[in-house]
Image 1 (cartoon, helix red, strand yellow):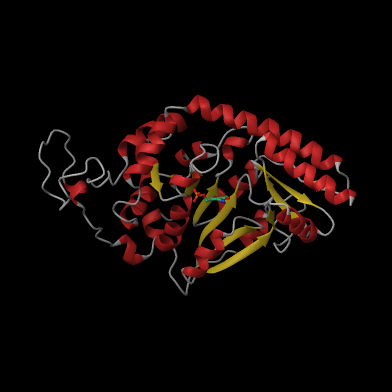
Image 2: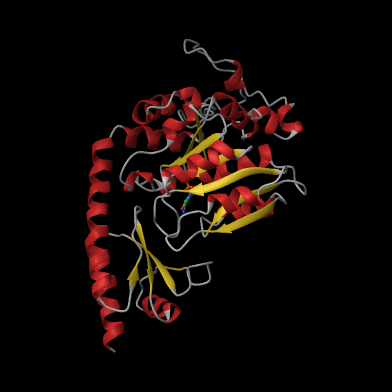
Length: 346
Ligand code: PMP
């Protein structure tokens, strides 16, 4: 098995990263900062933020049980996804393999970076066909993407399937766990101790209720995190975002209350949608439901006309005639259910 540095593009492995003022002086006891060409007025926003977000990582480390040295924080998990391509994939030569259907940004990042994207269809329960994924990999396959719980299908990927990929794939395995807090059982983050080629993605955008501040996490062994830190923008997570995350991390109880409420509302919404008749609701371990029905686009348009926006996934592979519905508050979901009842009773 190659190390992360051996898998990286040679120019990245050899990169001498930009060294910012806040990188070079890290002591806490200085009184006068004249090193970064900042404005001396307008504290605290006049100062560049901590480039390695140490205060936030210290608390994330406690909550997630992952050493701070094994945590990367970025501008949403989308930044970490893009970094994977920029670090490991040689444009015009390398390729990646992903389960299909899944989160659309993996393909977009591949396209932006001129990297071939090999999508391998899941089975009828949206479980990845790992043998086919391994079969479609070759010497130039650098990344393999799993999303668990998967967007847009909502299901957890079976653990043993991912382990099979980890044991047999020669590149980096990425497990996107954006929705893990809504799923039963534990994250697979503990496996980073065993697998140097594993990268886990999580985010503050879902359970933590902070999509607006843009903060994503990646967990991996130090060598991979080191590569990510070299390639990222020096101050990739701004001061306001770090502050908002610190405050929310202190309110972990409030957040778990939201998660419980969303999970219980998911059950209610699932039952009510199934009760409307003519709808197949796929089992979900996330904060949304994929729902198949006749004429999904017509239903979608009817909802839009009534001011209710869901996601039409009908053009996505294996998701024909399906809408993806986020679990809202009970009042919001009641509006949706009322509107769907009207649609079917017209
Ligand atoms: N991964 C998955 C599976 C997602 O569904 C999303 C957002 N829709 C993201 C990542 C992006 O998360 P972030 O807001 O942290 O960039």
